[in-house]
Length: 99
Image (cartoon, rainbow, N blue to C red; front, side, top):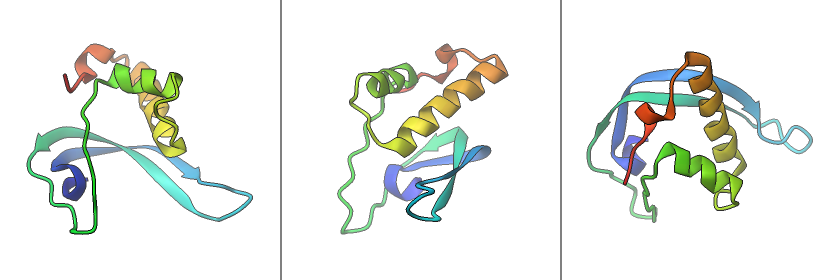
């Protein structure tokens, strides 16, 4: 995360284990929630062309629902974070970032 975005986290909460495509591959992954963030400079490799866009969490959820975010891992992670927030009794208000 630090290399691509310049963001580091002091706390990581494991939210979900998943299999990317059971019928095709045995690839598995884990979704973590990064918390207590610090913001610095990114350092992508020379071959990487990455644009970081900060949006409010509620906007990211809206982007899933209206089809602007279609990546399965991103969709899975966003909705798992939403469920985690509900489980913790947290409101979106404290989770907004970006402008």
